[in-house]
Length: 154
Ligand SMILES: [Zn+2]
Image (cartoon, rainbow, N blue to C red; front, side, top):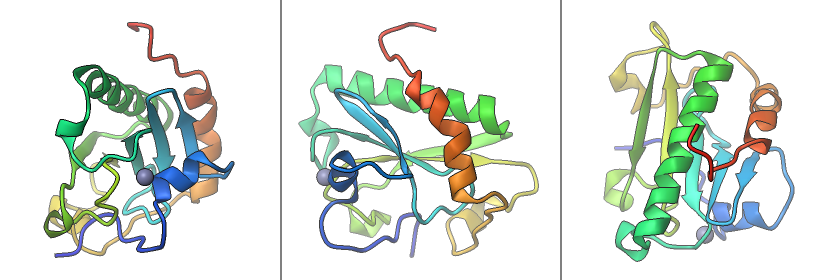
């Protein structure tokens, strides 16, 4: 079963993103990062990862888990504000058998969903719904991530 991320390539897409300025990296914090999926299954598909190149949850400290989940929560909040979706699929693919395209660097998928976009099953197939160009979405999201402060409670 093919799943969300299928960007097979040399190196690690997350670690690579930390070392360059590109039009996919929305947020680089001290512990976490947010990038746009280069091969989204739907517009606004984001990936949230720890800065550390780790493959499993148990390699994270409790603090790092908290920050990672806070980054997921804030990313969902920004997507809500900017793109007004009706819902979200948020999840982890752990291991190749579960569909992880980049299994060596832990990452959450955040997939915004709209009524009528497609159904739950086709998200997991090869149907892609991208009505807005990824660069435009990036430009819309970037200012919000630039202002992201994970140390506040709002
Ligand atoms: Zn990595």
